[in-house]
Length: 121
Image 1 (tube, one colour):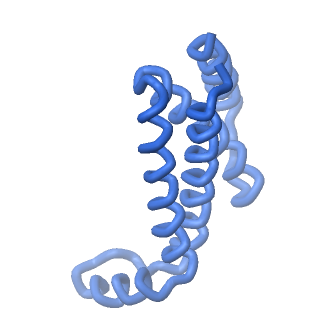
Image 2: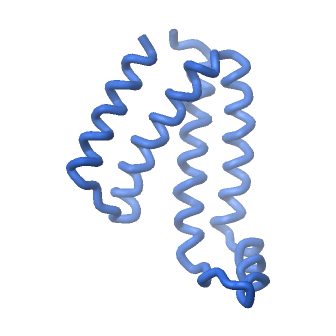
């Protein structure tokens, strides 16, 4: 089952996760949104290194996703990609941004991991 499509899928998820982490880092200094702040926010987005990297990585992830689903069934690829993304984003947000993870969320992560295992069998 470990085909080229699966490796592309995993790489797409990894690049997409990096994009989300970079987006979070780049969003720390954005002002609160209001009509008066619209143009300053647009300027900040267009000049923020992290947000530029987010756009680049998001595009790469989308391209890889397209390649992955051309080789794999969507009913296989989509649940795997979503589940891996959820698990890894929660864990990496804990590590990089000190976000808390409740015991209920840990239970959810455990159940998602079981789900990934079942979908791949």
